Image (cartoon, rainbow, N blue to C red; front, side, top):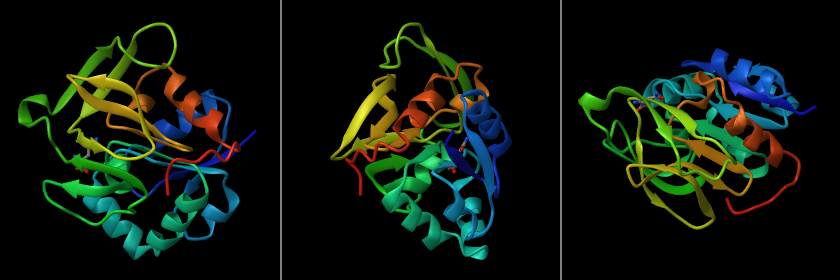
Length: 195
Ligand code: GLN
């Protein structure tokens, strides 16, 4: 059973921990630079990416998490996806720079602050996929190694980059475990496509 760390500084990390356990993983909450040494993969949850950046800096986690992502699988949802992107817009801000993509923060505007939609076109097997968007970013560019697994209104919302995965929605808030299962399936096979 793989041990997955969930960055637990801010945001909805508890929901991720529950989803990962349901999908069959062991879970460790990551708050210090030591925990990444004990995990096989990392989840960066949704929340507020600017606050998470500040807390990562404060707890000395920025470089350890970046180094972890250069070797092991990372799954970022919403704010987590923003933290993984090479390029962040609206406004520009630093990131772990692990995935070749550009994301625009809060890109659906105020009317779409929060919305639950059904994605019918996706690559996660049979059946519709529920997607919960909360002040979500839009992925404006998917660079080399990115494989779009689901889109909404023409924009990618679930993208695999080799061993890494990003979602602009919150799969941890739906009862469907397929997105987490997809991430867990990549742990340990060392496939590439990302930095
Ligand atoms: N709007 C947040 C940000 O820019 C992300 C929202 C979320 O993670 N649900 O960081």
